[in-house]
Length: 327
Image (cartoon, rainbow, N blue to C red; front, side, top):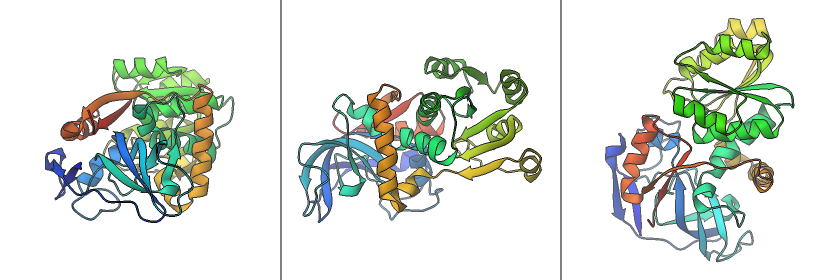
């Protein structure tokens, strides 16, 4: 089968499409014919050797995917040959024509969900729903501020926030990203390159400040959001797409009684599969109700996977980009 692999750490240029041997599933595993694999910022960090862990080389990027089960191993009861599924691949492997997954990391997808939408659902909508409902305890009537609101996880957070009954402030960097966030239900949009996030958020909230911050960006965006936080706000650290970790000023936390917490969804899936499945089932129920609507972005053929990571690194992405191994 064909797969995208890196043999050394670096930029997208280190990736190459290679022919490698496929393998049969072992006990408790399933073999999936991959139809689409999502592109995540995590992939760029791992390929660069800058993530929290470094997988063994050669490494195949791609941490979530969707496809069709073509073979099951001994003892598998969660799915059957022919099932349309999505799968979590925390150690990578999705940018390939096939993927062998532990059966407890595989989830059936609704009949009306495309492979492109399903490929990015686990991380995008799982991250947003877990962070806002299970970590941040977002309540109806509260105000939610989202950084990076036009990316795949940002759009998912807008939809999750609205499903929970919150008023949503979307922060993004360009007019087209602002327009996209507005089209998905944001109540207030702030172009943080042109106006003060704090001033705009305070105006929108009547000087109360926001109740919950969802931040997958870090850097200056996090600092601006913290200044917009209100009394007893909850700030959710989801990632650092800016390339700069969130710096947390203790004085601002103290004077506003702010709670700052992480929301590392991928690790929760690994450590507590039962919780992960419950969270995803909640999100899939909202999809069936039409409240969560994945926004597929640009599609890339397998040989153009380096371009997909380059666009992600340059933040030239709207929605959820996917690699199509069989295009």
